[in-house]
Amino acid sequence: MKLQTLAAAVLVAFAGTALAQSTPAPAQAPAKGTIKADREAVKADKEALKTDKTKLKADRTAGDKAAMEADKSKMKADHEKLKTDKEKTKADVQAAKAARAAKKGEAKPDQK
Image (cartoon, rainbow, N blue to C red; front, side, top):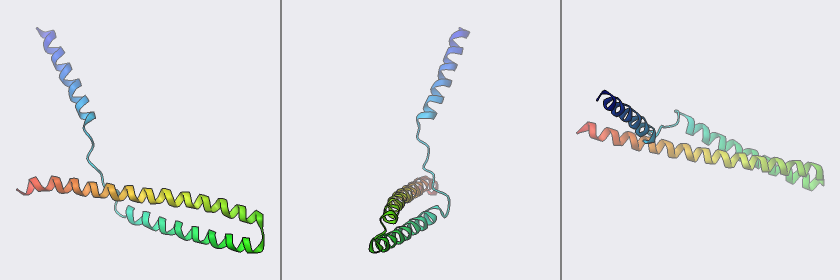
């Protein structure tokens, strides 16, 4: 009899931890100012890309092929950085919206 009770208790304990792991965590908003900083990084990346284009044009008119290749590779790197920063900004905005919606959903039942 005691063995069955012990087995049932162990089964309930494992089932509880399995359920706790399978439930999704509530959405967490990014830290305050993160989205603004992300947007500033995107602006800076756009400016860097603009500067790179200007340098490339100047090197093209000067006929400096080595500098042109260096400028092209820098432009590619800056373009990739801009792309990743845009994706990060988008993800942070979506996380903030989800956290706001979750918070709003939690607040509604408390108000009634």
